[in-house]
Image (cartoon, rainbow, N blue to C red; front, top):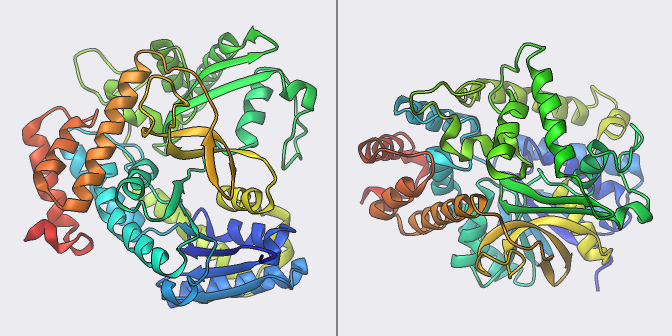
Length: 465
């Protein structure tokens, strides 16, 4: 057996994933025994990431690690153990277009990549490519695991489950990243305080064994449905935490960016409505119609402001500038390690390959972990996993209210995946009308027509035949 895994990264210049995967691959005693294959369709981006990888490898003394790259994934995919999707084509351009067109019809998306017209059309753009990658993988690396790190995570994961069952796959989001998410809630409920410089927080076993944290739902719409310590219900403490943070938000000017803006105020209301704590408020506030601005009474604290594509583009450009300066030696590589961090996907790969027995939140079929949803419901759940894949841990039942919302979101995602594969406009309309944000048939038809035309260059020709 190989000493270390061969990890193929599709989209090596990823805003979120590029530098962290190199950090983990050269730092982990398990991963540095293997091969990192970087793929990017932009030759300059690929060259920069390969230079950074080599510098990091030399600095870390990870000479066992082989780093290779190509603009053609098929050249490096042979015998891969893991294929990680982290690509996105003209991300901010298309998300900005989705946002502007939807907003003209009264739909306000603060993220624009997982629900609403933005989530639906991003899936139409990305799922065909994911399925092409799956086809190549089945031919060249049939034993490998595909880890999808591209949004909309749930739709693309459903698409792989339904339309590429010949490969092994699961989907991932960096939101509920273990052990950090567990440590966060232990800290804010007072169960355990971690030191400020603890980069990998591990609580004392005697406390960890008494702390119950049940999180479940669809990606970007996940909820704490139970939190307790040694039998004491901690949900009231979570509610009080949200209340105090919501009050604090009014003492400073609100964030100008859409996703983090006034999130504790939105989260407090969501917890009061559903009796559960939203773990991804920056997205979940976009999954419900309450904050859209519909109706007569004013929306508290305000209707959602829309996704700021220009801000995201500036952030991505700044991050890439930092990457190029590190790769070119304009900034010392020591800084890469001083301020760097690992990523969720390679944390999971390390645990799977090394049989470390760690638990992670994975997007995969429910398999009866949530008792009142079907076994094939595609959910984000705490899983045990090894090279045989994820096995969700039981969490009980979703409460009414969240259950209905979750089923509606799942139906939207299932219909979106089916529409993306078939290029069927009637199915696309059905997906749009099932979506929780869309409330007018004529508007939905107009949004579809405008987005199909505006994104024609990046959509399959079958949509227009």
